Image (cartoon, rainbow, N blue to C red):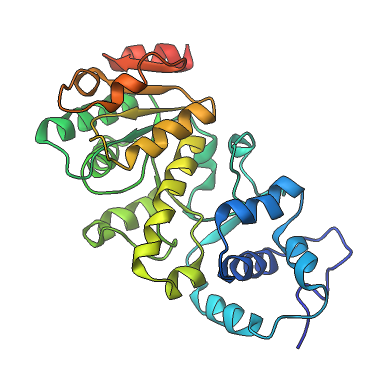
Amino acid sequence: MAPLLQDVLGTDVVSPYDELMAYEYLYSREGSTLKKIVEATVLSNKLPHEAFYDLYGFVTPDDFDEVSLWVAQQIGDFAIAINQTPSWPTALCDSKRPSPLLYYRGDINLIESRTISIVGARKATDMGKARAVALARDLSANGITIATGLAAGIDTAAAQSAIANRGKVIGVIGTPINKCYPKENRELQDIVAHEHLLLSQVPLYKYSIQPFKTKRYYFPERNELMAAVSDATVIVEASDTSGTLTQAKACLSQGRPLFIMRSCAENSTVSWPRKYVDKEGVYVLDSTQQLLDLVYG
């Protein structure tokens, strides 16, 4: 069995294929998490194949072929960006939890554009969706790229509005790059992938074999990535148990401004905004111009 990177080990050449296979194999191990993989790679100034060799040396694990052959069959209409190489977007260099690898479809250069995340409840109110539509429209008119998680509700409304108003969209998903959730957003996700930018850091192989209930943990990590991609985040509406609050925390930890729409901040049925509005870097949003002035001066 041939060892990984046998032809380039010891040179300055980086093989995207081998980095992909190393990342996928590291993630396939029992108990693996993004946090552990980041610690073994980026935070240790190592590429995925180097972390692989730290563990296995030149003895290729018996089940490596199983993982690599399965992943090879999934390779198609997507590319990868590798941290610590020229392929990595400079806008992500200050991320507090930097993934060693990103899967993407579309124009990766959109990450370097001025970008605002618009996020919120999946079970959004009609008024909430209308606010997301209006904000995405106004930001698009000002040349701002809209980042969303392409979830139901607020995310979908914002993405559809940006596209309808000839703006640009970055979709950051909590599934592998070749999967879609929710299924009803397949057409929207395909538009984003072909005409805008679709991003994922979710491993192909592990996702395919793990229990369904454990897959939900990729979504909070998705929110952390979306916060890193964006210059600021706007929460349109969210309940006290909303996954959107993961992105609120990620904004503060990464030094990104967080905006809470006034209608949400003053909503007496939720308590979470009161925990944020007095924090540094958090603003109650009244207008698009306020957002543009505070973020871009």
